[in-house]
Length: 152
Image (cartoon, rainbow, N blue to C red; front, side):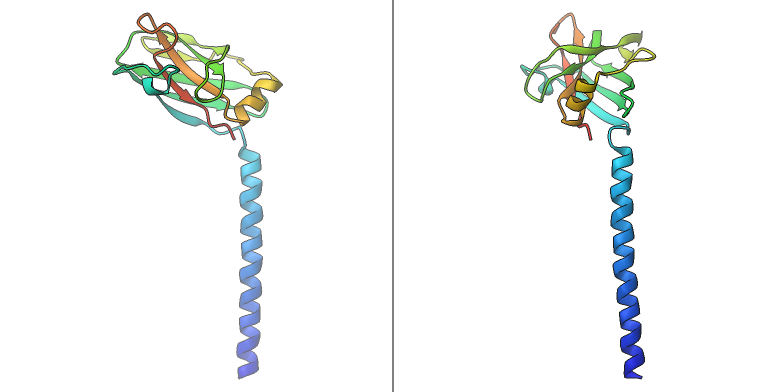
């Protein structure tokens, strides 16, 4: 009886180890497949601007940058009269150039134009967390609200 018990323990242990390996491999594969392809939902605020802006305005951006470098974005803000919105290249705490300008689709709503793409170098910046979305206004032409993309 003792030998059967030990044999069952070995089988159960082997199954547990095998399950752990399969689970770890599956999660690793999933993360690689999803890298850079999932949508990020960002909360834009004046405190993220450089320099920070004291504003009641807030916003949400849903951004997807896929491994094929295609870009889809929808930005909606409240508490301000938005004049423009873009993806910029720049690390948190810095300002950088516009790389994907958005089209105003409604009051305080912007979207990336159909076919928008980033370059290979910009995609690498995205994966490194060095892109951000911001929204400009007449009161704050340099940007009133902002959020950093996390990348993959």
